[in-house]
Image 1 (cartoon, rainbow, N blue to C red):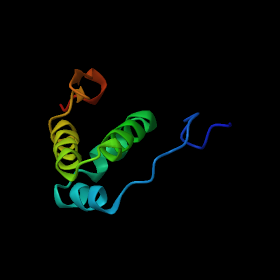
Image 2 (tube, rainbow, N blue to C red; image 1 turned 45 degrees about the vertical axis):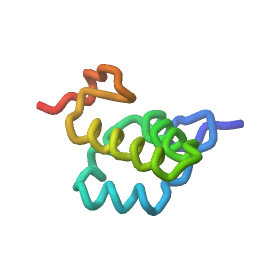
Image 3 (cartoon, one colour; image 1 turned 60 degrees about the vertical axis):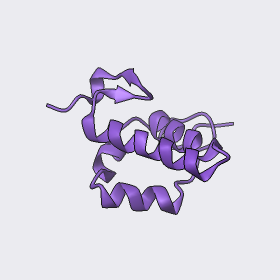
Length: 84
């Protein structure tokens, strides 16, 4: 398997419409796109793996909150994304 233009060596998860809408509504599209491709892909895969809609929504809220605050990725410190 070859890497795509983003440098990912694994398949890229398509962004579901409800995630696109949430990014737009919260004004976080640029923050999402500023994250490395692996983080974008991990977030989408993690949200989509949830079986229950309630869990998907909880994970989506976590992603949005992390993008908004910066400095956090999947509940871990991520200094590269800190907001100045």
